[in-house]
Length: 118
Image (cartoon, helix red, strand yellow):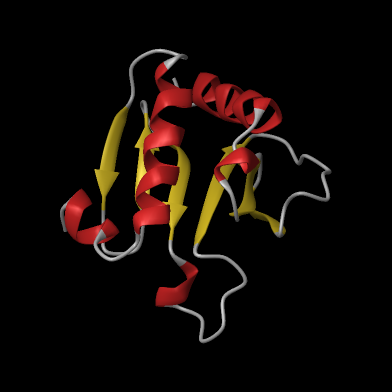
């Protein structure tokens, strides 16, 4: 699936993707990998993922979710869910309702995730 196909019909998700790219680009090189289920931001491994919950849920609370992979659990009420799929690997799911949600705090989490993905 191409990036354009993934984002087709989702202009807000496209704007979130562009804003996330601009944040992550400040931390150095990265690649983007698109699958049917998500857009992955990668270095030697994935560190952040954008996905559209409406593809999986009948009544999603947000059009787009940013999932951030960290080696620790972050306690923040901003996260919809935090899961620990493997030892030392925590996925933090952040619903994005407005581009302003991608603020300095989120940028700091993305920086940490990118640095640990080297």
